[in-house]
Length: 248
Ligand code: NAD
Image (tube, rainbow, N blue to C red; front, side, top):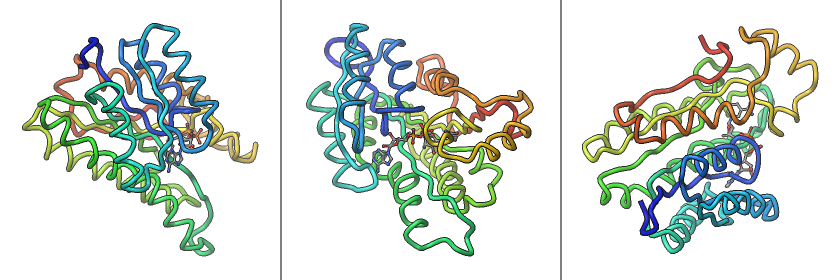
């Protein structure tokens, strides 16, 4: 909690999609929010302004979380603005889909660097603060691709499965200081990431979802907000599927 009351949440990749919905939902739960973005300053500012309009604090910070320098600068900016960090949401992610047979090494590296190493960098930059506070919440946005695998997404599935191993190891390392570490594994969610897929791929995906529809970013955000809440203090090392039943 910072000096003005209210917990402080840092959300990576929060200018749009699931990250944006998480930032807004955490603000609704009384958090001040650090809105990280990579490129779209205007969109990030709009998210921060929407949060400030509700009476909570919000800042935007440009940073590439795939680099140690980016993650450190992000955490420093958050500390300068709010004095502490209570919640870290590792949401930033990219896809570079294709069969492994034709996958350039660059596509492997870019996806692993952003989705998996980005979380490592941010946890590393934030954990000292949480260790000192003897409290904290860390949540990774994994994917059903990480729990089940997906043809054409070997790089993405490896990164998202890696996040689950990272989550469980960090849950064990940080439990003695009352810091919980969990992952949310969305199925298919209606965002720009999935809108980039061909229409027949979406139709095929929906056909496999027991609930028969895509999820919304808000439905992922409410699950994240629960895991970030004080009420979820006895939940750690878990992977919560929010996927319309796709992952069962
Ligand atoms: P999105 O593309 O709309 O948002 C991803 C955000 O991450 C973007 O704002 C992007 O700029 C940011 N980002 C990318 N690289 C970054 C970096 N190096 N540093 C900082 N920010 C960076 O996609 P989304 O659907 O909102 O996805 C959010 C998360 O949810 C991702 O981790 C994604 O893998 C995961 N996810 C999405 C779905 C889905 O169906 N949309 C399903 C499962 C998991």
